[in-house]
Length: 184
Image (tube, rainbow, N blue to C red; front, side, top):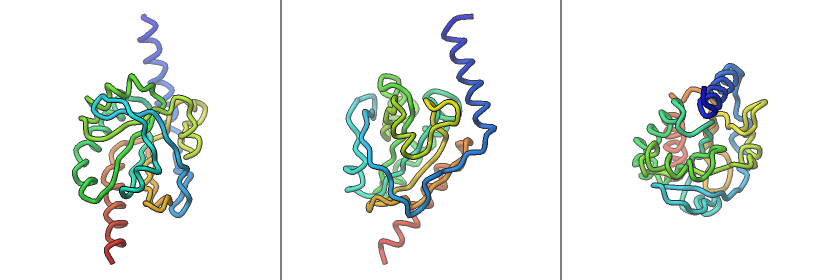
């Protein structure tokens, strides 16, 4: 067995163990969203993502995922890519965050994110920690948590589930609800 295969099997086992643990978003609607900037990529091209700058344009959908190119994370990235135009029509920016290195995320942004939205590297885990998104016992991996952050820097919506199935419909609905309150 190769070292690379052993590492992948170990990572898959750790992720499976952590999915059995209850997951919950620690930041609640109304809480201040911790500001951050991080190395990121979109369409394979690196840049520096700034939450403060993105919030100047509208709401931000910030989603944390465990590991690029794993099955659930690929499904989730594909779904966010498919819904990108719906988010954009509402003025929302989507950004995914994981503990992966920027080189991995450059590839992931071009293939799984389909050049539609950025993914940021949190290799030191500081962003995950500030959003209480790190997995218990394996803090270099993120739990699957999605936040909608209003332009005022407050959490408008939070959703936590290791299943990728409802993150996109739930956050898109939350952005629509937030947008509707802004038109009044």
